[in-house]
Amino acid sequence: MAMLKARMYEAELQRREAITAAQENAKTDIGWGHQIRNYVLAPYQLVKDLRTGVEKGNPDAVLDGDLDEFMAAALAQRSGATRSEASANAR
Image (cartoon, rainbow, N blue to C red):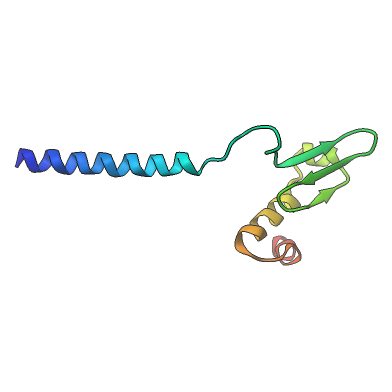
């Protein structure tokens, strides 16, 4: 019985290690060129989400937490909906 417990324990450890390794391999490199948004504060003002293409001309509001449009577009992209459908559902 002790041998069976040890083998089951070892199998569970290997399963968990495989899951952890798969999660680590799925991570992308965090480096130059992998940013999510660009913030341009001068000479003109613009915030652009590079994943979804959403642009907003008021960076102060975005920096203060007004991220609804960006989140709706990102969620729509994940679910396959269009940006206009997502913004209509967010209201």
